[in-house]
Image (cartoon, helix red, strand yellow):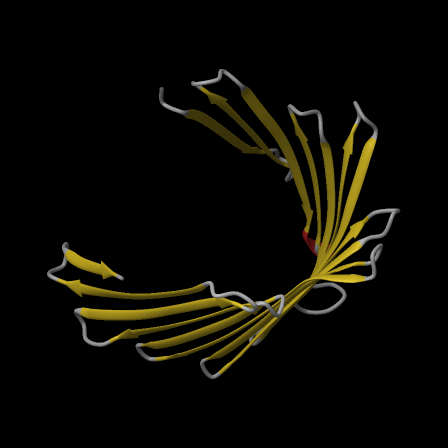
Length: 215
């Protein structure tokens, strides 16, 4: 079959309310699904109200305020409700973005103990560093801790990363000439002999053709 058929319709009322309706159907299984979203922006106060509904009978509401408490700061409260089961969930999302920094924090609202997700990315003169974490307050445990560092100068790029203190990786890319590009990748896991190493090269034959070799 053709796999999946999708349809999306968008319109906007005279009062500024945006409507988006989407639908999809699998030609193989015959299963169909759809969703409806309404969005209204109060530009004078930096507010955005969004409501969603889908054919799984899940209702969602998001209230977002941007650039009001501070320039570059965005705060949103996202909630969902399933009438059939009575299940409720919510998430408080905050992001702060400026020229050389982007930080954020999401908190899952859960009575048994929320999970806190945080990340930060800073950049300066070709250097880029990022950190990502997740903390389970119910278990008093850091469930995720990832760090990455990158550098770019002209045709040269370097990237390294550490995930949860056990997985390490690094890559180097260089555009040697206008026609030749090379890269090297290395990754390993602490406490094991599982090491992955790869080399790749690309040669541009002409504007439409190229040859790529990977080892």
